[in-house]
Image 1 (spheres, rainbow, N blue to C red):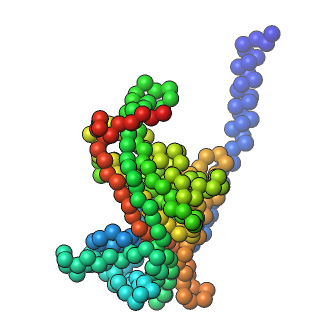
Image 2: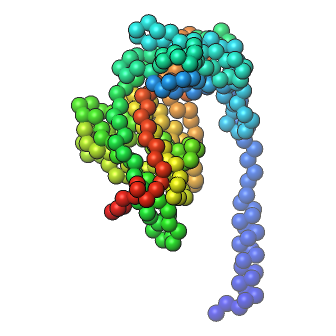
Image 3: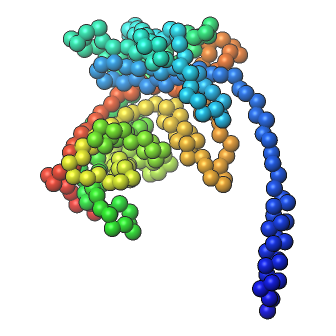
Length: 302
């Protein structure tokens, strides 16, 4: 049996050996040219629509991105309608809104194709997308549950019901709000393929599967009298892939993380060899359901 003194000496030698293995690496990462970043997700909802333009910054730069100012931004559809977006506050948020309170014009119409054109700093960027079909949200209910299986803390878990439209593949993006506050954790990016997960069994035309229906819950479950809003959007296959890859990048952390990279964009520079853009252009129909957590809306959670 080794003496305590021997063990202490061994630990000191091991610590010295480990410390001698440390190497300081000064990473010299070249600065990449700034790119136009486009956040353009329009809907069929009434009222103001926004397109946000900024300039990208280097990966290790934590500063707020600089707004892309003095751009010309227009959106048109395949029926000849053209919508001009302006930046009245000079903050990179380009807006369009109806002419007056009685104007019922909406940008998004199911089945139409849309084109985006942005002119900025001598470059012209373009994109095209289509607004797909969408089902309704039939109901939104709640059941009492534990926050986690091992927790004694309880709350109310929400579940929405909707049925996928038959006859084609539909791609969904689902958002939810608690007391008017959009939930924005990475795991709150909820995507569905025909109301299920991509690669699962054929669910075309069927009710959304249970894990998707119950994906609209915050870390701390809802309480009585909370207002809960679920928002269902349909997106194109390209939009679904964009959000799928973006979510993977946001979850890319830990020991086995891979080097970060830009998610492919559907926005291109018209000039061959011109500086590319990042971001995405989508036009989606939106269906919502809002309910207050109350005893009248409680169901059996089995």
